[in-house]
Length: 215
Image 1 (cartoon, rainbow, N blue to C red):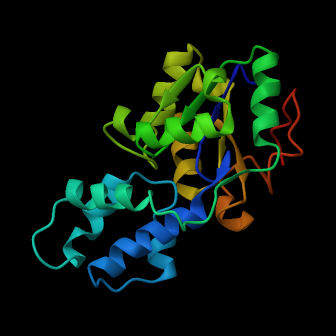
Image 2 (spheres, rainbow, N blue to C red):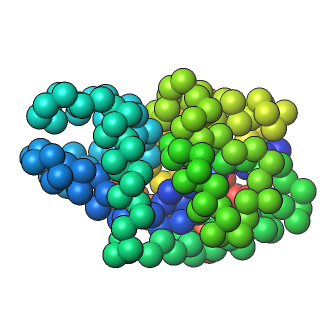
């Protein structure tokens, strides 16, 4: 069965932003003198900033709110020395191919809408997506399935007849919980961390339409 729609994650799936995002989180912890390690920062991959910050808010000294800390992280994005974000190999070509084949396309990201729209414009694929669901559009972020369920509903397709591309365990769990098939992209974590996916690939160069879902 070929999927009737394809839904992408953004960070780490279409564009290599995770190394930069980890530096942003680390800078926030360092600014406030909060101890942290790679394991803690790595656990944020694929998740909404608000929910991550709510879980670690108790670590920050003084009186801070989630929204205040989130604004600081967003402000750090303007730093000129952060690593550049490059497209995941094959990502732009795949989106363009699927669009040319008239496949309904969606995107579900844990990033805020201005952030997502900026990256999609940078990739040159913003106009090729039929639905974009961001952190601003859901009550519960990944690994909750709300984002993917919403994307499928707006695309007018059943989740069981759709496929998601994801690079993080939280995103894979969200798409599977929504009832979708998932192709994992091991740009952010080792392939074994994406074992819940139906297939795992190192990038998007080998993906062709019609899609081969199984591993």
